[in-house]
Amino acid sequence: MQSQSAVKRERDLDHTGSARFFARVLCVGSLLIFLDCYWIVSAENRVVYELTDFSFFPTVLATLFGLLLLNTALRRYAPRAAFTDAEIATIYVMISVATALAGHDIVRQLVPAMAHGVGRATPENEWLTLFGGHLPSWLTVGDADVLVGYYEGGESFWTERNVRAWAAPFLAWTGFIIVLLFVMLCINVVVRRQWTEHERLNYPIAQMPIEMIGDTRGLLANRLMWAGFLGAFALEILSGLNYLYPALPHLQLKYPLGQFFREKPWSGMGGLNLYVYPFAMGLGYIMPLDLSFSLWVFYLLFKAHFVALTAIGVPAGDGWAGDLRSGAWIAIALMALWSGRRHIAGVVRSAFRLGRAETGPDDRLNRVAIVGLIVGAPALLVFLRLAGMALWVASLNMGIYMLLCIGMTRMRAEVGPPTHEMHGSRPDELMVMFAGTRPFGARNLTMTRLLAWLSYGYRCHPMPHQLEAFKIGSALRTRASRLVVAMTVASVVGAVVAIGAHIVLYYRYRFSVWGVGEFGTLASWITNPRDPDLPNIYRVVFGFVFSIALAFFKRQFLWFPLYPVGYAAGYGWAMGWMWFSIFLGWASKRVLFTTGGLGSYRRALPIFLGMVFGQFIAGSLWSLIGVVTGRNMYTLFP
Image (cartoon, rainbow, N blue to C red; front, side, top):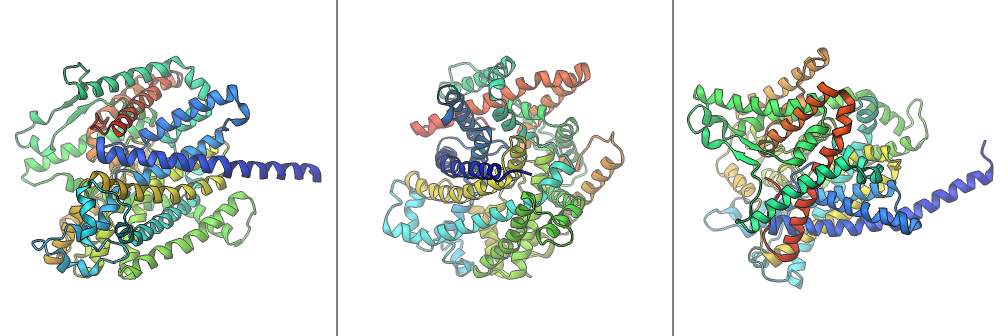
């Protein structure tokens, strides 16, 4: 048994660590959130367009790389001031979660939703007549004169009239986002041990920050890493210089082949791209072989499917794929929850001390998560009810949305693809598909369209970053409870900065057009009521059943190479550019495994990590130069 003095020493050390955690980690993390969010918002809306389409954000990688270089110097010259690995991991997690909010598919879609209902209304489109009365005044800006500067730019946001008009929507949506992210965090707390320890998912994306933080010296001293880094970095710098000065040479690594497939039935595939992205090759190499194989094979199978449909005279395209994948995502989420049902039940029992319960840190954290879900989920529904949405519609919409989020988070933990884009998987569109528009009415449909920003594309979604935080924390000895605190702080700071930065910068530089189509769809639903769409329903059901069948075959036959997550993630706008690079990463790994076994794979791993680091850091530098100079710059994707 420990003596009282030993217990006191441990308690004092814990208090000291807590003080350091709050004074240094949360403050530094919040400062870097402010800088990174401003960087992302400025870059994606002014000078480049696709920085947050990826599972691993280039700007966050660049920030982490700079922080590690600084910390290496601190450890040598001022060791007492240096950060521990756990502290750097916590800061990284904070920046990742906040950057997800600021990125392409979250707040950049939300801010237009606050303005477009009034700002884009005209006598011709009759929006104010059709649904203007259903737009909550505390969620949208109702003064069209205030929005003139928002759309035209060249003025300061900081006038009394502007601030008054935007204050209520800003505060309301900020609060909604904070509660929503906390609910997602609670779900991740509940499932993390099941997916990490019991099912032993791979978490390929999390391996990169773990390698960078856990073995900084070894990584920086590895010549193979620098070879991959410098090769990818040089290619990206040359491409950027060629963009600015077309007379300069660069290496052509992008070959669109659509011009060779203009005749039917080949035109049905809609084009085929052979693009080489070093970062996607690196991520394809890190992924498990069967999973990377599933991604590129299913991409080609989708293309073959479209060709076959065109040959028999059936129109097909991305809409088909969206329906099939929506069913697949929902199936993946339900299968994941079903496989973890005993663990989830155990977490609930532990949280409420039902039966035999422990009192360790995990039980305390589980209790916080369960209570958070009990309070947070109804709070979201109350918010939507106050906004005018019927409770049953709000429950259905948010239930479908959370299932899609769980499916996407599960897929990323299992596969770790370069992107997890899910265009076409929207709760409101699925609801209208299955029930038509008449059961919902104009008021409910208006609110579902105000929530459409949640499901725009899922590419920079924060929920997978929250889950990966626990994997990173486990590897780098970071307390899960501190990660929960850090991610909650990141959600608050990130929501405030991301929404505020978008509004302020739009008034200064004029609005970049997003989100108009959401209200156009709403007007169409109201003026032309829809019936249930049976062909689309059949496709969603087929995607659902086919994914379950794939999971069954994979469980019954270990040699079966195709995964349901590959089917769900294997097609989409972003995958159309990346599939060939994933194939190259898979082929490289297959050859090395076949010829040299696991040892060859591990020896070559630094090269592929370096390729990811090199292209992402070079791409981040080009975007930063663009932000500073105000000039359009080369973007690393697509």
